[in-house]
Length: 254
Image 1 (cartoon, rainbow, N blue to C red):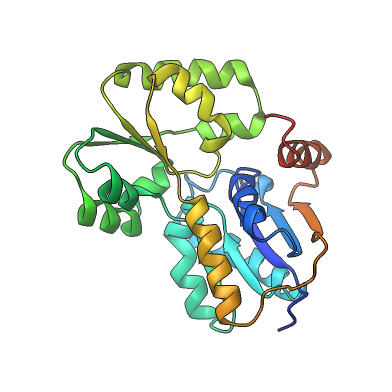
Image 2 (cartoon, rainbow, N blue to C red):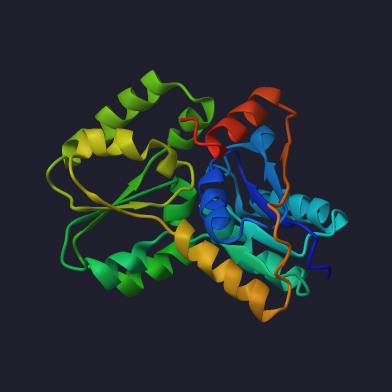
């Protein structure tokens, strides 16, 4: 593999930008291809077989683009398909996002915790193994059905109404919030507005660190001094998605 080849990153939409932003903090000189599968969004309500099929199609595209490693920036795809992809494409390093529930165990074990994630993630075998291994017995699992779709749509009024309805019962009752979907950090402030002062846990910074370690271990890190190129692909060819993606990436708000 060529050090100058791109890193492929994919999600069911633009939510994985929260992962890319963390990666860029420590790997600004790499080239990236970001794939937003908005045509098939959301993944959370699809069968395991269908999710595997969708993920594999994206991986095949990345392979054609000669990507040197692939980041699964979607918690549902990570929970359902990461091992499937690793088994089928053993020559490619896959770095997969995971809900940061172990971080609660490590840093805030005694505090009441709310895990916000898609239904698919919460029901997955991978997450349940993680949960039962590190359960602090003060944890509420909240499947946020439809929230990623509303965030993808970008309608702030809908987001606020959804959060008020779903989260108001937990205000003052939880101290930790695990953001188990890469879309959710985009509405960090809106969640805090409803829940009050809470501590957020999100796996993206740890994924970025792990990616850097893997690139260095395999001698794949790009040593060029200039900033890398970011290419955006959307499966539904939505130009508005592309516009929003680069606006968020440049810090112009959500």
